[in-house]
Length: 242
Image (cartoon, rainbow, N blue to C red):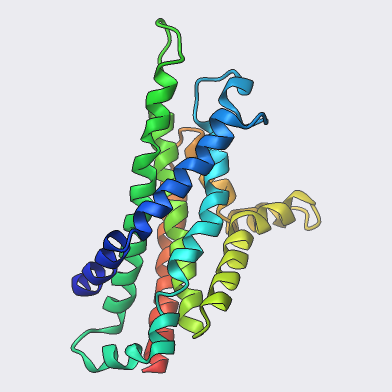
């Protein structure tokens, strides 16, 4: 697994993909937070918090993470190198987890780069005020889990097709559904009491709990279980191809 991870990790960071991803993530976030005249601009909200960032970031990840994962398995299949991997003394789960962790490392790198936003906020608050670091760190942790969930979805879609474009499109669609699709469906109140359970299937409500500064084991378990299931399905799919 670590061999696969190091291979993908080196390709990301030596090939500048990681740096370009982090740069794009920081620039887009910064434009909405500090420059564009919109409801997410920190100066317009009047609050010394990163709530706007934690609202915008999932939508950036929704398009960015599938771009990182679309080639993970699909490229191996189209190039025929997946069959070569099968001949090596590497287990299927090691291939999936190695590639997954490589993408997660980029997500973590992107988030670390945005700590600059916290430093910027400190320069705008009054001397007798302080930032709620507990809520900020909890929000970052929730965003990391959400990004990891998107990575697991991207790995899964990439394992089903040789076409990287199709893998990207299906990953974006699946990420949207699991992030906001169930939440949007539940908001119509069409199913009565079942709307609560429909809402909990999606990740939006669980992510929002982190933004409130609440670290609930149920929300943590949701992300861990769903990510585990998605990766296990990817492993099974590769085993079938093997």
